[in-house]
Length: 229
Image 1 (cartoon, rainbow, N blue to C red):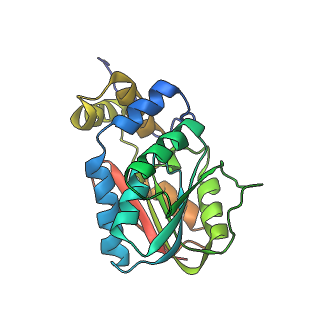
Image 2 (cartoon, rainbow, N blue to C red):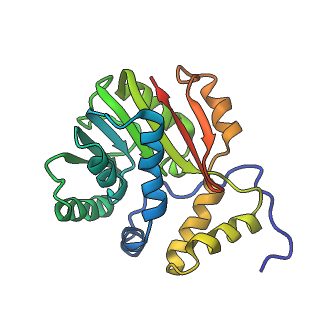
């Protein structure tokens, strides 16, 4: 127990790629139904129920959010991208189980894209769940979105919010992951410390062509950034 909580004025970056087998297994088997269903609920509330076309999912992980998105919006197809090969192996298994392999194509790549067959200025929309806090800089995410989404395309990003101090971060971990394996609780804690705050995102977007996007706090630990390109 900490005697004096450490203030989190600045984020503490964590490893970008989750490729440790135990780590990947714990993440894939964890119960994320509530936040993942919240992701698609909020997306539908902000962008409507008639989404269609080709979407890009950045940092798809084991594709639970991707699969929920595909089920909710049956007129979409998805290119799902992750930098972790073990995560994509779990994703392949999950998509096969849920009968979605024909609509969701997996790509192994990391930002920024170089030799990956991802189309620029082509996607009808992009979805991003819990990738931003893994990246070494915001620039990687917002540049990729600007390059890949067509004019008028949909943008929807959800991520964690950095708490005020380490004690608050530990309290959030215990509240929402208290019964999960220690490795998952550890990763959740470090993810909270690596997360951005709304003013930091807003300040960065002011310097980009995405400065019109809306940023909202939607829970005690989540924010969303959404709008159209």
